[in-house]
Amino acid sequence: MTGNMAKICNIDLQFQSSKAKIFVSLADAFVARVLANQFPLGSVLSFLIIGQILDLRNVMLFKKNFSLSLFFFIAVLSIILTFLWGLGADVGMRLHSL
Image (cartoon, rainbow, N blue to C red; front, side, top):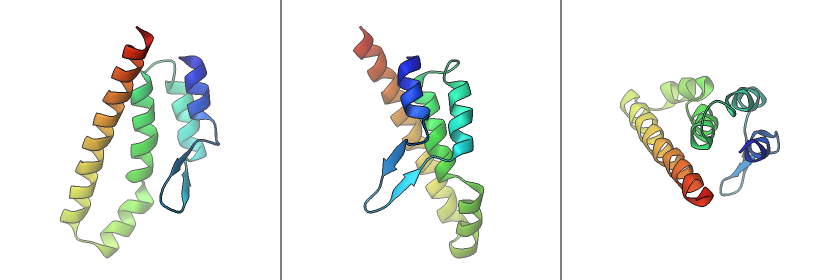
């Protein structure tokens, strides 16, 4: 599992969107690397994803441009979807190791 986490926590980890690439921040990658030996893969990946979605700068931009209810809807929806995705990653890793 340590080899997988080393690949995940590298700076070159990227998530593809439609036209742009969003890189995981350097600080989040270092924290995830420390957490990699203590938590399952899905938890660390969820931390990396939700950190980018609910960033403080994003919260301030949402507050200025959108209603508060829309922000809470997007925040709750992203937390639920990230939780399910992280749970799927953990279950997939356990099934793959059997």
